[in-house]
Length: 401
Ligand SMILES: [Zn+2]
Image 1: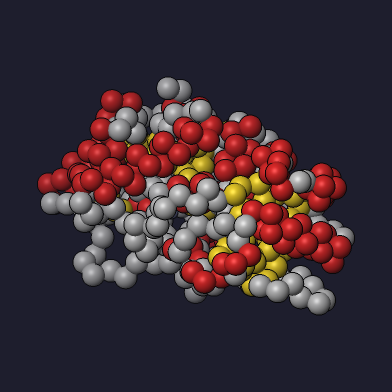
Image 2: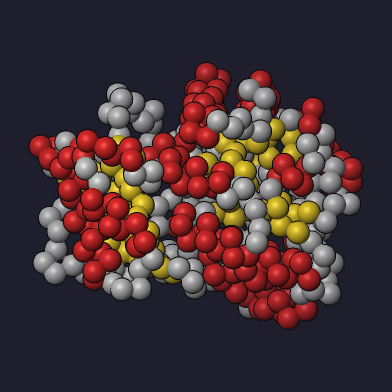
């Protein structure tokens, strides 16, 4: 009971409270079941747009609003014999046009076309074709000729490279940073963490537990980016809130939706590495860990021309090998001080009250790019932070490196 009431009590007095003391790096209990993100509690189900008559192969067409902009995402399964680029384009045009016609309030329609025979959701093969179409560009998209697909910058056609997933990814939810190693190694990590809380991070340590404690800058970070439907809404919400953030990208998602990655850069956000398949890295052979990180670094560099500075292990699970590999690739492994658990879909009110509870100078807020209850609170979070003299920004900006 008390636990349920706490967020609301804290919400009432937020603004005049000191941030709570930070929890220490934990050692995960043995045999712990990995949580699935987002949501121990399932997220509120997204409303569907019903097309009459339906489009063959349409798996779902859902929509979501951030309070200002409404976006839809259509998922279409295409039989193998229709997987040629010109047919995919025709199907995508039909889906986009009919979605806009069915719902006048839509501002943007995203589409993902998968091969029907091997569609397996997040862990399966990449889509064949994706696009994101704002209503203002509908005409341009509908006129797009199949021989000039690249003329539309928010479209991706799978080049068909033989790149099967390495393994089924685990969808880990981030909680406390969890170090797996000997008691001595864990103690060493806790010491480093405490030291950074007092003195701030040093680039040479390869670890980022806490920003400069005297800084009024709070790093805002989003894990698991990028997702269709959510990306346009999140970009819009952050623009309205006037804040920049660091996005930890899952490589496979960045590969299938490269235009959202470029949008992030164009809006001044920072890109960081969250592995290619979102796997739990502890226990994997060293070369697999390196491949997960290197492949994502190379992808981001290829898409944006920017090199990557920060890395965050999925689920916050790490050990000495993970740190060593990351450091070897020039990456700083970054954690967080403030995790409201938005992946658990606790409700927008709880997300904001929990975030404010730990909000502090030099702090690092952990959110997820596909948590629908996070979208509506970003504006309020930015203004509540400002009221405390704190600015939400990127990790690099906070570090001042
Ligand atoms: Zn993650």
